[in-house]
Image (cartoon, rainbow, N blue to C red):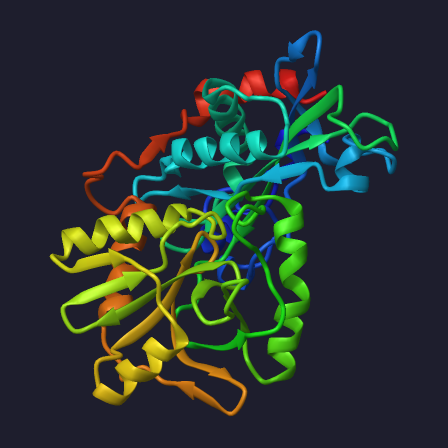
Length: 374
């Protein structure tokens, strides 16, 4: 498969769908999340004696994983999720890639996976965007989501640190998140996603597998997702599905502290920075279901919202559990935060925080990419 084969379409299609938008894809607004995996993969391999190889661009189907690998047998894998955007001038950039890289490094250490340099990860992330630059939706109409994954690929059924690993990055174009429909959450008071001392702070396969059954239980109860609570008392707020949780009260915003059970979300950190920009005081503190009910009774429960790379800022209309629940009274803070974050991600205006990392233009990279696609 050649890079040029991804670009062919007639001029009228190109005018309507954006320059060089692949024919195999629907309109950006119909992409959803994760449905269309891009054709190439950027991969580097690690050997305990030789270290990391130079990254290569390969057709996605050329990269395989043995069923006896530690990644499949014992969940020895960690991953990240970051996005690339197209600005109004048609230039591409990654959003906060260094923060995602550092979190992947921390996750790798927790699972005894090999260390990866920031330089290698950044090079691979930029390469993944360069090879799929036409899969980045037009300005303001979506993003290209990157999934770097570090995993044990050595063939062995023994439970031990593997001798061979691989780091791969796949990409998928995504619609802009729809924040117009608030989410309804089920507070899960029986199952546990993470406990102190466990894997809750690592972005690893096991962490997400542990949440699926709870999400199914929530949907059977007419909710969109599960709100996870602490493992000891089943009372204190953790994560909401794959999102960090925020609660807006009069004059302040609260979010649970990073106690080792909660993923340190990059969007979470962005929202905390933007709250400061808005002049809103925020606190990292324990929040219980009893607190939510008390604030609702007093009229102080203004807003609840979740934040994450996929969701951006998602308002919560209701949290229910057993025969009770809470409904925030409403406000516009979540919508304002979502709009401001979208401006920074889409490249609309200045970047006062240095969150965007530019991707080299097409002319500087395409010949090298064609040579690498083996």
